[in-house]
Length: 282
Image (cartoon, rainbow, N blue to C red; front, side, top):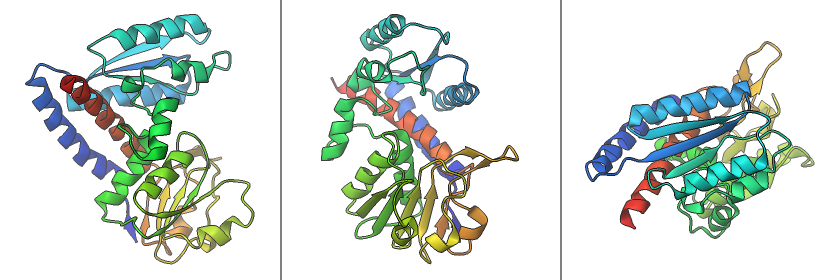
């Protein structure tokens, strides 16, 4: 079994991003990312801090806008409007989830699609659907980059995605489809899930349910990508896939943590760099 090492792969990508960022800076343009976080969710805080470190390592300018948990909608929308107008900010990311009193749909709609480096704006979602897009959501894009790194072909393969979220499952299915995979999209309520997952040459698990995917649900020699991050009863991070069981059956398998997570973060850097290049071309 080959481990799909997201940390090592992300390190390679960061080196290329740093090189391209340096070249863009030589032309007088520094890619800029603005991250907006509302409230003090510990997981969100850690993720934002990691993004700032990633940007610093690659020469990308980043700034954080931390708003209190009781921030009102008007204030948040005004902040986004200002960021949309700034020429030095090429990417805007609003850390999700937002507090329940805020309208997430309105917030995402308020981001300029050309700066929507998370690719959550409906305009960008529609472009992904038709296969003509600038930005792909970072986690699905990270999965595709990981498959590419290990020369795992998608064309003609049977691909099963377990999870139907707008952030991962649905766009993941579309990215695999655009690569000419034959895709089945499942979820936690799919009847006889194992009957479908056992057909998969490439299996992507993204439900958020610890231990959902067992060895008897995996095809011999499959590539298994575990997107989920669940906190176990012992306080450890685990995925949807029972790693020790599936490792004896899969040909390729991601660890949790250290698999898709680092790739998600590095795709955000690529999207920010691309947005800056597009602005430069304009």
